[in-house]
Image (cartoon, rainbow, N blue to C red; front, side, top):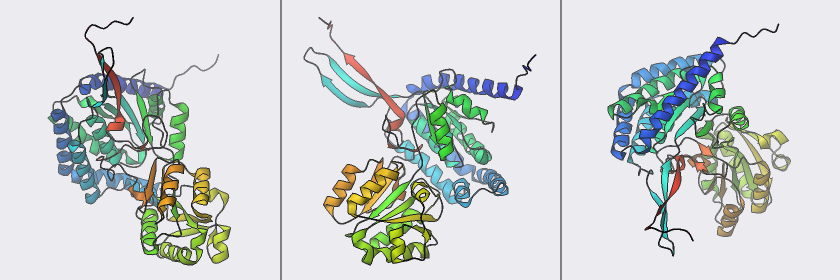
Amino acid sequence: MADQTVDQTALDVEALMLDMGRRARSAARPLAFADTNAKDKALLAMADAIDAAKADILAANALDMERARENGISGSFLDRLLLNEARLNGIAEGIRAIAALKDPVGETIAAWDRPNGLKIESVRTPLGVIGVIYESRPNVTADAGALCLKAGNAVILRGGTDSLHSSRAIHACLTAGLKAAGLPQDAIQLVPVADRAAVGAMLTGLDGAIDVIVPRGGKSLVARVQSEARVPVFAHLEGLCHIYVDATADIEMAKKIVVNAKMRRTGVCGAAETLLIDSAAIATHLMPLMEALTEAGCEIRASAAVLKVHPGFKPATEEDWRTEYLDAIISVAIVDGVSGAIDHIAHYSSHHTEAILSEDAKAVERFFNEVDSAILLHNASTQFADGGEFGMGAEIGIATGKMHARGPVGVEQLTSFNYRVHGTGQTRP
């Protein structure tokens, strides 16, 4: 007879997650019509709690950092995991910025009258319960919790194992804020276990409790979520971001932007991974840009055309054009003007963020019209691909799909809508 023993741990995790789902669904109902003042009071109390608990949060983060180093985690991921006083100040200010945003719930998106006298409105409504699955970044705990609350949603947060202590310390501050405002504390829940079975349970939708999943992490995590999820997903694939430098670009501006886009923080999804240089700018732009990157400590992987000009760089392989390095490495190619840049991006891009550096208005217009990515920039660093920089307070992630949400996912993107039809006795003939 086959062994029919059931893993008790798996059962316990499943029961835990189903209970979290039920509690989140219960909390979502009062949140959907919660008063704006109550939500903002909770958010401001959360920010104050983070300010007051800095020592505890930093101590928790030190435990996570120590464990990550012991496990040989790479430098770029350590940077994502690290919290310091400046970053905690940024987290608290981000929450306050979310509190200052207009409440999207109940906003009339459009309104019109029909010839038969019906008055129709499209009005923003909360999504319901959102599941957020993320890796490394403990700040996502605060950003996602605050954004979901502002949009009237309950949220279940499943942070990475490597940031569990940090996320717990931040989550305690979020719970304190909810309590201070008299809102249900189950509105923001953090999965308390590191067991990967918790992710699988969330992807099933927790018996109908979860309305949408937002993954934020590496390619393998996002691929698993997209493959296994039984609820809608706000897709966020890798950030394979490109910068095209046109022959008309100001070289000093181009050097500053390219170095910032690659080296400001190499581990963020808006970091540039491929540099494309106009063939008409080889004599004027190529070597100044290569020298600026090299001086900043960046490794260059060069195409054959680049190596003909300067053979000292490491040759780029086909895989390099498809790689999100998240490190101080950039691949560099020569392209035939804006047409060549558009073709290269169409072939290799993850549709996240692309930039053009140019003083040619027609080239910029063509780039914006023909490049199919969520965020396009002109004469600015790709590292502006961030909800906070867009004035959204913060973001849950950058959505690269085309359905519902695209680009930074902020409070408006965390709402749906319904149609409200007002009549005076009309019946349909």
